[in-house]
Image 1 (tube, rainbow, N blue to C red):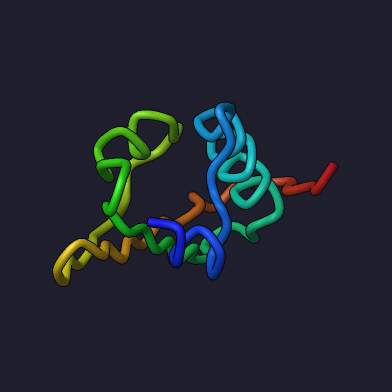
Image 2 (image 1 turned 180 degrees about the vertical axis):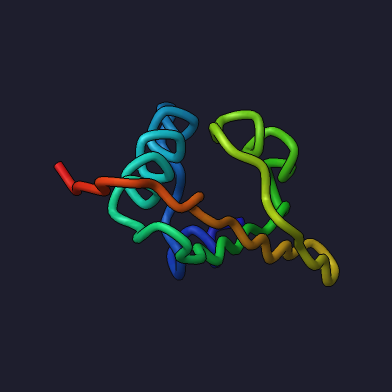
Length: 83
């Protein structure tokens, strides 16, 4: 849909690598015990395809129509460092 494309932009052909890398970076900088809220709309790509790209599973989620809200947490680590 060209209206959505103009308003929100468009995923590139490397969308899966971009999402995987972005999620890894979010988890890297997230403090131990912290929460990451992830929103995804399934207008073109199913949430299951996106979840396959992530190294962790959500604690829980909520679906309303085509929009999914997912909650992830970072396990508590000793000697946590952001590198």
